[in-house]
Length: 572
Image (cartoon, rainbow, N blue to C red; front, side, top):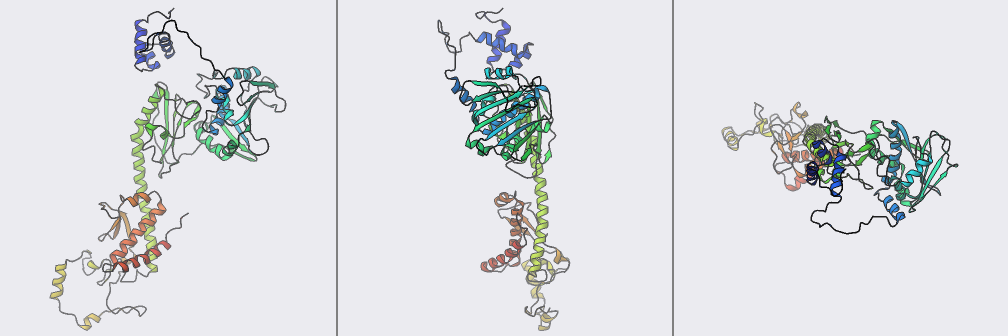
């Protein structure tokens, strides 16, 4: 037997040194072939009486045992440690889920019943588990902070403070329960801020089947506003999605005549094939999806013991508050049974063993997730560009038809006959159809070498205006086949500072997909269509009116945009 004053052995001394260096109990145990619990005992035995570093050992001092001076106040403060009333309600759902888990019963139903109106509002949480006998109820009341579930990996509750959570919701809590081996129903009643409870036989609310019902009454007014059926359903879907998807149990939320079964969220997007990571504390499982669009509500949840969500979003951890987790495209959950939740406040307990392992595992898959997000973005951008290009062509087909531009040689973007005003006017007179413009010098030589035209030459082949209102001079005439080649759009492979430019050779409007305006609008396809249609209208008007004044150009731009906007799809 070791004595408190005995010097540690060489093995124990080595264990103590490794523990001071920050090595985990389990890792030390594996190194020396003993359990982590045995390592803890050794460390405790040799450090309980040893002087703290930098502090002289006191002699003759009095050891004072800690005690709670005001038990009722301690009970009240502990029960009100929850940030959100829904978190407090969730503690009772956890107790019902644990009752099923302890018996190995899957797929059973937990019912949450809300009655928020009337003189006596009440919330009830009901299960058909094993129930609790009078002795068990008495034990629960006498052993706060000392849970029988501690060490049971199947259950969530281990801090034994969940029962006190009723004080966050109302002034009274009644646990009505019956076991399978008895016809009697018993009730344990607790009042807010009291250091005692009352145990009695229950007749008015006697149960017909084994199980437990928790009645929460004397509810606070703000709780009645927060705990609506819709909010409770959405909350439980987020917090218990993993357990619901695994079929561990079902949850039904009832208010009045309305009943809704809580179903797990259906992730959107492509499932990432990421294998589970094996650790000394169990497996870290990844169920991650990458969606095509960005939605700030799309998050990756952190799930711990018993399939219960600890964090709604991975980005609540400062170390992981960055891309790709903040992209709005990644959703799903990361499940690690060994992670522990801090008491009261929803947060991950940052211990020295499991949390660093979890963090390292998540960081190791970030490159894969980031590459997938980038690939999906590129594919979506290409698909969006194709859809918008088709939409722009349809819109301008209607606009040009409305303006009679397909038949108007002064406006056609595809005139192939010689004349003034055609978009491809420069190459129209060449027989090779190359569309390139002659140089200024070449044009001048041609003019000097050809004889001056006669009046007959000028009048030959003149086209009569269809409505008699046109001018008598020759203009650019459209090629009927090419007049159907409506404008196309594409990303600019070599963008400059401008939002867009017109490529004459391909008759394509090239837009700058790096411009701040494009980046601002690209996630909203309807707004992006409006933006790109405006760019096409700008290029069309500017190119077809090279000698116009700024006032004329502005008027023509408005004329075009009014008609373009009339044909844009209606926004929902």
